[in-house]
Structures are given as structure tokens and as C-alpha cells.
Image (cartoon, rainbow, N blue to C red):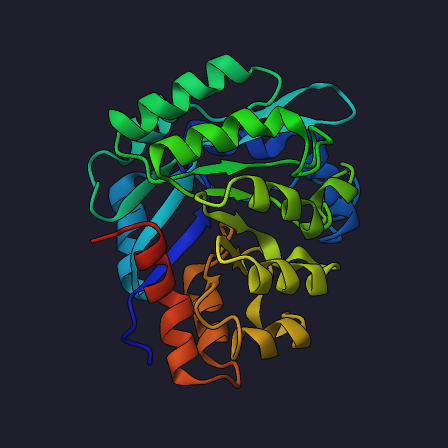
Length: 286
């Protein structure tokens, strides 16, 4: 099973300029409260690298493709973008390795018209394969009508839309991340594929229910180390959700995340589908 070439559907811009965004106040607070970095000591979550260096890391860990998301993340406290990764910058960073690194556009619901223009440009000119929306800092649940223009545009372009679900590790509201909020949009846009991200924890039952119920709702297990996956989620992934779950690292160590996933007590068929096959089919990868 180790020779399965994984597809990582959830990762972030990796250049030296891009990783400076991890210095935002929200991440420094998260470092102290969640990761127990001592007070007064700064924490760096990532270091910059080139596309070819990223691909070398992928090759060493057994990855075929990685999705890089032009994420817009909003500060609930400061009312400003703390991540404003632009599609053009992501494209320029990944264009040396277009067969290995896949661009994913972002969305700012407070600048709808501008965002829709950038998404269309990213898909038609840069070859991006989808959109990722970080809902929590904006304090918008997935059924908020500010997101419906995004859903309509993604359905028009024939691309999946992925979104943050589950609680927020950063100091942002968590309730908008409840997976149940995709129920209404999934009904209103039956020809659009939705991807719920980050396991939906602590609302894992909602996460499972939405992906099981709706033929157009999928789920990714990024941002959680596989050995800590919710047991109910893992059982469903190994049975009724075998064709609906995607794999991602959320920027964590390629080798460690894949090793932990392969060590899970689940079927080999499930491992193959989650690590690679489901993403290849959903995102129409070659």
C-alpha cells in the first residue's frame, strides 16, 4: 500500500512571502493555547520553499499531486483579512510544476463581484480545479446567502467548492463550521459538488450524515492526524462513505500523515480510494 501515490487536496501557499501570513495574531494565540508554545516565544508554522523543493518533498513521501489553496482568511476580532493569498501569486508559484501542484481559488464574501471574477480567471486562464472557502473568520455558515453567488459560479464552471467545517483552532467563531449548514445549499445546487473539510469535529456525525445523504457532498479528513480520527467517522469511511472521503494534510508533514493513514485498521480498498482515487475522480485529474 505504501506505493499508492497520494493526492493531498488541502494545502497552502508555500513561498517565503506567503508563509509570513502565519505570523498573524490569531496563529500566535493558537500556538500558545493549542500547541503550548511558551508565552513570549514566537512560533513559525512553516518555512518558505520553491515549487521544485515542494515536489521533491512530495516524491520522498509518495505523493502524486498537492492542492494549493489561495485562501482568504478573515480576522473576526480585527475585521480584516489576515490571509489574502491571490490566485495570480499561487499560479506564479506553481506554474513550473503544473502536473504535480494544483491551484485552488479562494473567496471573499465581502467582495463578491471581485471574487467571482478572480475565480473565473483562475479556472479558465490558470487551470485551477476548484475553490476553497474559509468560513469561520467571516462568521458565515455555509447556508448564508452571501455564499450563493459562489455556489452558482462554481456550478457554472463545473468545479467543486470546498469549505472549512468543524471548530476553529484560531480565535474565531466555531458555529459557522457546523457541517449541517451545507444541507440547504446541497439541495439548492444539486449539480454542484461540495467538499466539507477538516472532519467536521466535534460535529462528526453531521459530517458523516451530510456526505452519506447527499450525492453531491464529499468530505476530507485534513487537519487531523489520522491516528486521532473520530472512531465513528473512521467506521463510516471504511463502509458507506468509502467513495466520498478525500485525503489532505493541511500543511502538516507529508510523510507522517501518510504513514499514520496507512496504519489505520481499515480496508486496503478504502485506503486506495481515500488517498487517491476519490480525488482523481471528483477533480477530474489525469
